[in-house]
Length: 104
Image (cartoon, rainbow, N blue to C red; front, side, top):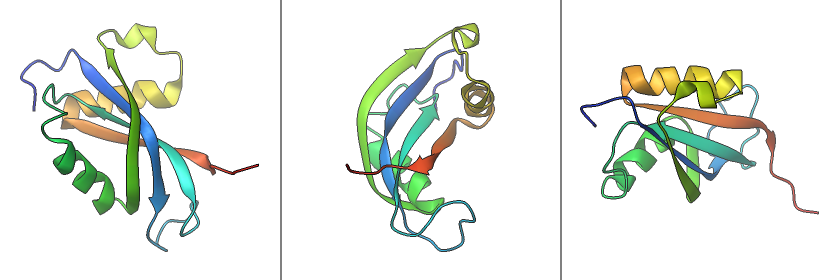
């Protein structure tokens, strides 16, 4: 992990629920996800990051966008703020949107 935890990299994308042990997520549904990590080498370590997400019950993981966040005060969402703090403490944190992705 990055020695300086001031910068958190937010990888946005989606994943499919792969376990029936999730109370609020239905097996097979796709959800928007955000992986917050302090790993500045996230590109080289993407397989490790995907393994972290898979171990939490998700597969078919795709990332679409990456954003660097240096200042927690730039975040307005309480969920992202707490996830940012968790990432700073633990090296990474996963946020999952409760509503599944639907195709119209």
